[in-house]
Amino acid sequence: MSPPEHGEAGSIEALVQVTLEGDEEDERAWEAIRALHARGTRDVLDAALQLLGASSAKARGRGADILGQLGAGNAVFRTERGDALVDLIRREREPEVLLSAGVALSHLVEPRALAELIALARHPSAEARYGAVHGLAVLEAQEAVEALIRLSSDEDRDVRDWATFGLGTLMEARDTPELRDALVARLGDEDPEIVGEALVGLATRKDPRAVEPVRAALKGETVMVYALEAAASLGDPSFHPLLLAIRDASGPTDGYFWSVLENVISQFEQTSA
Image (cartoon, rainbow, N blue to C red; front, side, top):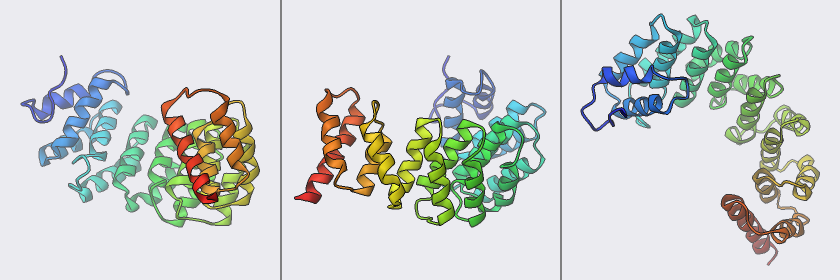
């Protein structure tokens, strides 16, 4: 039986119970969480706060999951939610709960959590550091940038990936030599998605060190959307024939990739007209 939608007559208690079933990514549980988000009432807030005090780590994590997007985009109970999540990070020991708390704080964009998130960024658990990197990537403080620079070389792939995305894209308005150097360092990463995030970040900032790596990526056996986006940002005329060669090499295999490719080619042709 599926959980009731937020507009139906399901009780908050019933929806909360569904959130506690299944594993972390259980879709039925997340449907219930989204239904609670959409309600966004004081009763839902109180139920989530009660979960934060549960003996079960899973229940505490679900409480954070509910608080993070309570109101489904509407700024409801922001102060109370922020207070509760900051307090949770200060006292929590379980990495999976710290992950949920960090992600929840990223939705709130909570500057009051800066010190706690910076401390969390040094946690021995990669799961907890992954929560920290989410919360930090949306903050504007220089200390957040410095923490992300450290996390961009983390031993954990997911932490490095989100830190690189945070520096390169979420913080695209920030531009310092240290930030650029951190992105350049990721051009040698073993993970192609992390390399792609670094390329986009450098290209957005018009860093000339991205030109040759982008050219190489466009000539590669497998071309990713990151390379197309970076080429568009840099606008180097030498990219145009490489983009045409990609289009001519074979028919479209991915609709999104092909739409981006056509848009980037069009951009180059308009510039040269």
